Image (cartoon, rainbow, N blue to C red):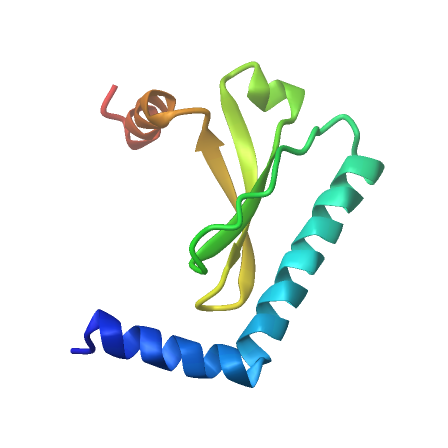
Length: 108
């Protein structure tokens, strides 16, 4: 298992090459343009702020009125390890998420 020191050394080497930085910047720019697209084309679904994450996922929320009234939102998520987008249904907080998870699973 790699130590943190070894991992940081590898990270520094990869950053020096510039490929990781260029890819990350490109991904962030693309996600920001996607968010701007939703804001322009679907103003009835307000978009929240971008969450850049820890190079695990990057997302921004959308708040359709029908979901917002139920304390829900849609997260447009980019997963860095698989380089793909997903749409997640999410609660506004952990309590709401727990309530809906119980309801969906039939535990309520």
